[in-house]
Amino acid sequence: MNLSYPPTRADRDLYPALMSIEESENFPRDHKSFVRIDTSLRVYWHTLFDICPDLLTLSGPDGMAIFRPFMAWAARRRLAFDWSFYLWVYVWLQESEFRDRLDRDGLLQTIMGASAARWAILDRSKDCGIVIGCADTSDLVVGWKCHSIRGGRQIELIEPEEALPPPANTFGYFTQPDFELGGFPGWQGLSR
Amino acid sequence: MRIGLNFTLGDTYDMVKRLLAEGHIDYCEFLIDNFFCVDPAEIAGAFDCPVGFHVMYSRFLESDEATLVEFAKRLRDYIDAADPIYVSDHILRFSHDGRQFFHLGEIDYFAEYDFVRDRALRWQELVGQKIHFENYPSIMDGGLEAPRFFERLIDDTGAGVLFDASNAICSHRNCGTPLESWRRVIGSAEHFHVAGYRQSLIEPYIALDTHAEALAADTLSFLRDYRSVFDKSGATITYERDDEIEFDAIVEDLKEIRKIFAEPMEGHRNELVLSAHES
Image 1 (tube, rainbow over the protein chains, first blue to last red):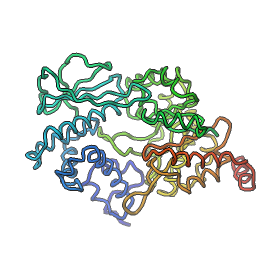
Image 2 (tube, rainbow over the protein chains, first blue to last red):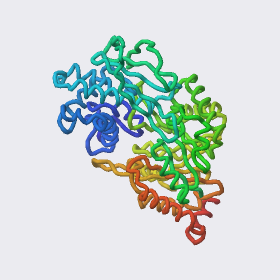
Image 3 (tube, each protein chain N blue to C red):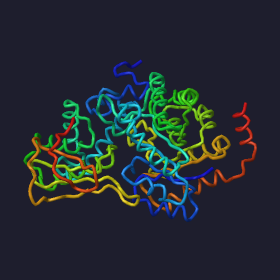
Image 4 (cartoon, one colour):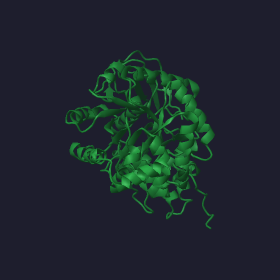
């Protein structure tokens, strides 16, 4: 009997490893536990790089120069991986070896748009929209939930005539209770 | 058997209308919480057919009471407006230790039964009606305990099972859960799902519930062999397609399903299946 890796009767035995590249390496590659974990990790990978393919230009085609250290960093910070997943990637990039190679405008728009879209499809509160701001740009990205049977979520880039004050940290957001932009209520910081 | 299609986002609206007009489907299943900001009256009048409601993100095993109360209130607005054939939900894990899974987790059917039973009772109470819970496409061996879990849940809570036939095939391929072990669950279920799956990219291969391919031969065989247990008055089967959405390919699969359930329910094999079910 091989007891060099954790016993895995049920999926629940693998929960701590499903978002951890490091923990995946505790499992033998010829066991379906490893494939289960690999399948889970691939979804995080595709969620990031399918939506933000420019990151592959930075990292190389397998993405691992970004994916592996980001996932480890996120694990140490116990990030929730909610709608703000992409924003935290940008925060990590700013602290990484890639910080001087970032196309700040283009990548920022993609990152903020991706997170706004993720909020619009996953959030189940009564809020109708989200506004995301960044200390690195005066542009705002707005995400709207689907509000018509024929429609879908909508993402807008807004260049306000009068810039809002920057959020205290890299990113901030506020939500909209209706399908129209209201006043500025102040920034909320990203939750972990 | 009524045959339907899942409707998750508005960009397949015209395709669903065409499938209805051409008689390929009989009803439409809404992933209803994707449409919580659409007027309930618009949902009710969207398609000229009955509707089913499938809930994705109630997270009823994990959400706090206030969140669930609010979710149920919003869901009831749509139930009242559209009078769906059924309301269904998922028994699975969306997170662990406060961190979100992007490929959702299966529960431990043995260790978590009492907890899930109590949550299912409470969730049905809040929604105000029977909820049909979907089986997971098991990968790990704990999936062997799923059929007995659902039998107990039906008995103890009055809940239904939205039996996903292709998920049962995945479970059979991945952890050996016998298709026969689902017989009682299938016999009591009125509402079904079916979709394509694919194998993992690396070995040892596992079957993954992807909703992006044509129906597999073993899935169709399962429906055919157990047809007398699936088919019953008022039953529905929803074909799920969430990627590689091509009209002609979807029509081909819908025709395969209709062919199975349109065939006369006669013949030695089906008589055997029926008599085994009744014994």
